[in-house]
Amino acid sequence: MSAALSALATQLSTAVSAAFGAEYGGLDPELRAATRPEFGHYQTNLALRLAKTLATSPRAVAEQLVEALDLTGLCEPAQIAGPGFINLTLLPATLAAGVNEPVAFAPRGETVVVDYSQPNVAKQMHVGHLRSTVIGDALCNVLRSVGYEVIRQNHVGDWGTQFGMLVEQVLFEDLAVETLDIEGLQQLYQRARKHFDADGKFVELSRARVVLLQSGDAGTLAIWRQMVEVSLTEFDRIYQQLGSPLTRADVVGESAYNDRLQGVVDDLTTAGLLTESGGALCAFLPGFAGRDGSPLPVIVRKSDGGFGYSATDLAAVRHRIDELQADRIVYVVDHRQGLHFQQIFALCRAAGWLPDGVPAEHVAFGTVLGKDGKPFKTRDGGTVRLASLLDGATARARALLDERDALDDDAKATVAAAVGIGAIKYADLSSDRINDYVFDLDRMVAMTGNTGPYLQYAHARLSRLLSKAGETPGRVTVLTEPAEQRLALLLSGFGDCVLQVAETLQPHRLCTYLYEVAAALSAFYETCPVLTSEGEVRTSRISLCAATRTVLQDGLGLLGISAPDAM
Ligand code: ARG
Image (cartoon, rainbow, N blue to C red; front, side, top):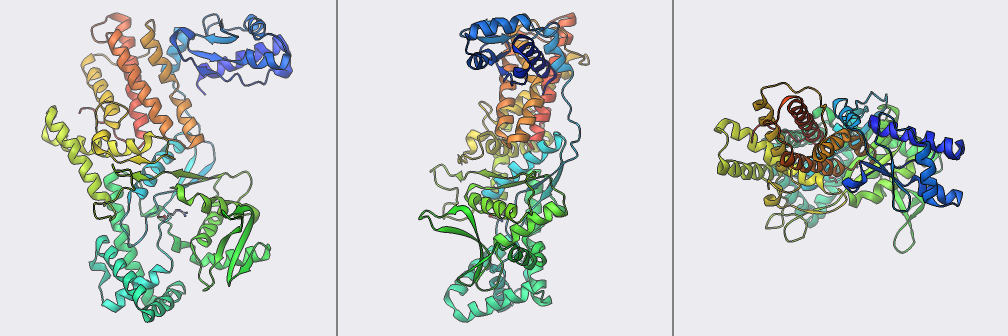
């Protein structure tokens, strides 16, 4: 919490104890940002809540509370409003301290594992994987900045029955897999599917091939490995284009758990958690039922003896707890897999693999839609290639820069990429992740409204102002105008906002915050001249601008968006 907020909370609880008895001192003051400037900076409804418990008039409680409240050096005298709200107005010096001494987070000594991106081998990455990558990167940054040790796990889909079919098709066509690219693999996939659906003999061969693959047959593994390599090369290229820090070292694909799957079955059997059902081994957990009320199983081993997606996820949880020593596990996966994860988490708790103190959270997100409101696809219904999507955004940003013609050609290329990619990321992050959103490039790259380029522009404008200032920013000392007070108050809430995102895993809260900062900055420019003011006021305003620039740059940085100094 910011220093001013925690000081206020402490003073309020001391006053409550003094006026009404220590038993009420622990009540959360629930300090909220005031909704209107005339209400000051913060508001609490503590008196109203206390009055209910004490069965007296809220106004009387408020008066007694304010009487006992010592805000010396922190706030103006507290005001009582309406039925008994208490309004608090920070002193300029308190506001200034919030800007000059931003909160820093110490290491927590806790590890969080973040499972995200997770594309599938032999398939193009699609917009769902884009969402997972963008949201996952932002959350990793935020979690690290509040003091967690962050371990990224890219749970790549590189295992399962489809690989029997794929390897068999490679042998059938006598293909050299290493000559293919991801598109070639995707087409191979389609031919293999057709073949599989049409030819019973091929089905037999594919099934036998899965068994060979899962039991470690060298020739089969070699072909599989080439498919993995071609795919990972493509994923690396996309990560690079996106500016994602994900590397090969973060890839722990489904195949990595192959040797632990039998152990999962054995241990669940010993624990009495598995039931045979139609030849498959299933776990039926209380509280999970289908629409018709029939119990919903977790299928741990399929009737053909093979292990599926669930078994892999069970083994992954054990690995994360036992070896990675996770204190928190986060899965950034689209909302349709919600039930799957609820079942996995419940089964792991029942088996004692996931201790009660370790939260496992499904960070669910909605679907990317086309302008027609249907899931985003190419005109012929195919997967939109991410590479061309990102190229398109960069080209659009470039065209806009060309129109304004404020930069030289070299700078334009770098800035266009920063703006184009930043626009896509920001659009993805800025609405509540559970919502679907429409992929509308024109809106994403717009310089007005709650967009990435709007914030980047606010930042670039500050950089320009500061380079023209001719003096090094120092400390904020003068905060007399309401617009500069409002800006200072917002800036001092940066740490609280980041902490909130780390708790709720909702990056849109940070976007909303940064947008508010940019809006407060515009209001500040309107009433508070910076470069044309003089003396201490000039220095203080320059310092306020520098602090704003730092918050915008750091905030965008946490979102994985770069902030060029000119655009
Ligand atoms: N590869 C999967 C997909 O594309 C997502 C994997 C999610 N992570 C997990 N641990 N199951 O849908």
